Length: 212
Image 1 (cartoon, rainbow, N blue to C red):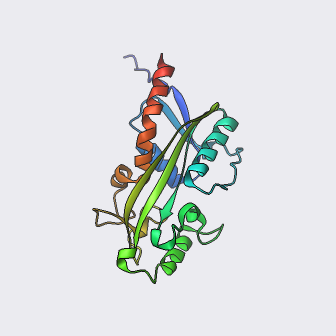
Image 2: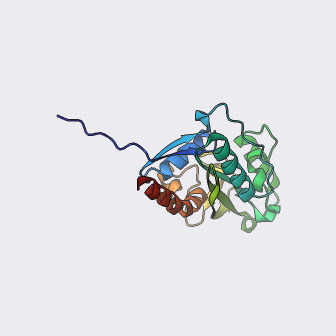
Image 3: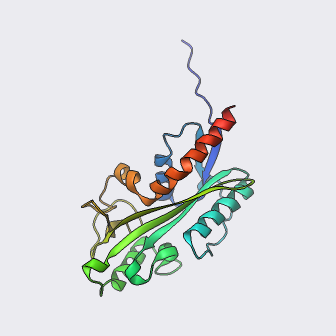
């Protein structure tokens, strides 16, 4: 019996992150796109990313993608995302990952957010996750897209899955927090998925050109 040979991937795509939760989400969301070999910055320990100095999610995503693509000479996908609370002037915003300090943990950030929301009425607890995803080749930026997911913030954490502010966020139309939802469900409705869906057609075009 002759063993069937698997078709090798056409493109190696690097997720510009060392966050294992984020990398896992990207892999899950891109699993149905054939022809790509997904890696992450964990596979390139010698690469030193630039510090996040952008004032918007879009700026940070583009910088991450283009810098890594040029340095690694590979196609790179990167995102920058965070939680926006309009009643808090847009905070945590681009500082979501370091809201409670540069070395803050997710729990530290959630604690600070809860403290700052103590004075808010229930109707003022509207919030949304915003994500910008950028796709870059060694030659430069190819596509950047935005996705948002709107919901409400709770006064107490619920759920043990997810990461970041997931235990506090309930998407409109749902009763469970992002930390209580099954991962597959979250990956279908999240801000990252909505942004990534706008990137996938460019990836598919790339794969088509590589195959011809």
